[in-house]
Length: 104
Image (cartoon, rainbow, N blue to C red):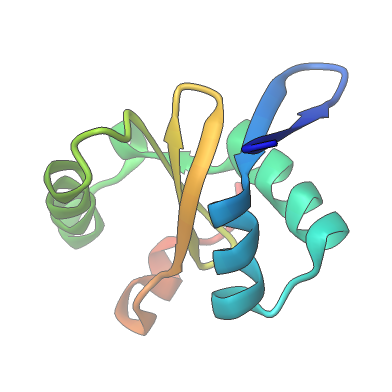
């Protein structure tokens, strides 16, 4: 199975095996905490449109680098790359942007 369905009351996201692997490698998170974080990022993360200043320029760079991903979320100092409702991969956000990523 290529992706795992995760369902909550408000939305459904799919998390690919690649995203799980990168979550473990880059964030040191196991499946259950990573799934919870991905759901929170999808529901509450800062979108590309909500970014301003230097963070917006950085988000623009990422947006054009990963053209297939149409849903970029910043949450808890992590960048989540979605295609619609499917999580593709995650990266740590550079330290210089951490102060821009305060939770809402």
